[in-house]
Image 1 (tube, rainbow, N blue to C red):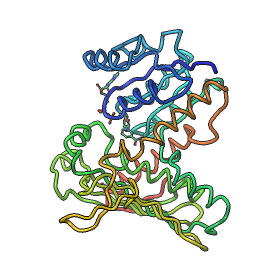
Image 2 (cartoon, protein in one colour):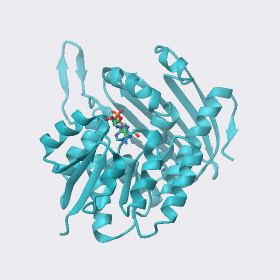
Image 3 (cartoon, helix red, strand yellow):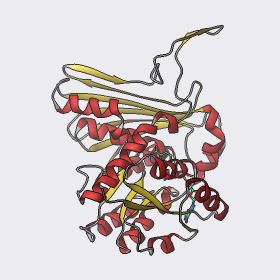
Amino acid sequence: MKTVKVGSVGLGRLGYEHAKNLATQVPGCELAAICDVDANRVKEVAAELGVPNTYTDFEEMCKNPELDAIVIVSPSFLHCQQIEIAMNHGKHVFCEKPLGTDVAQCKAAEKVIEAHPDLIFQLGFMRRFDKSYAEAKRKIDNGDIGKVVLVRSYTQDPRSTIESTLKFAPHSGGQYLDMCVHDIDLIRWFTGSDVKNVWAIGGVFEFDLYKELNDADNAAATIQMENGAMGFMFTNRTHAAGSNVETEIIGTHGTLRIANVGAKNLLNIVDEHGSREEYYPDFMSRWHEAFVAEMVAFTGHVRDNTKPADLTVYDGTAVSEAAYRCKESFETGKMLPIR
Ligand SMILES: NC(=O)c1ccc[n+]([C@@H]2O[C@H](COP(=O)([O-])OP(=O)(O)OC[C@H]3O[C@@H](n4cnc5c(N)ncnc54)[C@H](O)[C@@H]3O)[C@@H](O)[C@H]2O)c1
């Protein structure tokens, strides 16, 4: 098996997780380089994971001729410009969500990717690699629940990680672009349709920082798809019991539910609080297997020179566009068409 040599940029919350997975959990992959503007972090992670090449300048890393591919886990506003730099240096690219923080950036990224048809691009909507979500998609495609009528999706981070969430908030792009993009991606994927109209509502119930950012700490949106299906999503950062992501898909002949409740394992705990099951403590543990699986898929595509069938740059633009319209709808209080 040819070893795929990867360079990864961004060693923050998720960047470290991806770096560790690439170095230790992805067969046939070598984490050959890492980059972050924080030189101390680069040194620390290189020593821990045994990474031979280290950088604080992204373009310098992309110039390394040994590297086959670049994994982008930097702040969201840098994604599109880093895709361009990496592809101009002949590298295959995996890019974390969201594709970009405005639609113009996403459109520019489309042009860059179209200009490099020989290079592989994959976007980081890892929920599609989760076993339960993938099984739901297979059942829907098989017609098991008839026509999809409604997808309801909640994304709630735990209160225990609120400190890092607040630090991340100013460069996150806002709740719709940062959190709801996952739900929008699922709604498009499960309904097989594009978003037509959005109506977003929400408010600041606890953290004034979100007022300063013109954002909500609790945000919701109702969306109508081109094919008439409906979507509803809700997000916040203060779920009491751990990371909660749950999705319900209602079809004309059945319903599928993917919930967190009791899903960490089969343990039932009986103590002074009563009888309960444990949640995953954070998104990293909830999605660990999916994060590994998306990297196995990406490096496999690089090795075999095959393109991913979905998770394209166009999915990234469509999702970012809908999320951006949700933000505008939240700000204006109006239901808005996507175009
Ligand atoms: N798929 C998911 O569920 C998921 C979860 C979390 C984060 N993300 C995405 O991953 C990305 C990173 O998120 P995070 O939570 O790890 O952020 P973070 O703020 O914890 O980390 C960002 C890192 O990038 C580094 N950085 C900043 N500018 C840089 C530059 N010019 N060159 C190199 N490094 C630079 C910072 O020093 C920091 O270490 C975001 O786009 C976010 O949306 C996705």
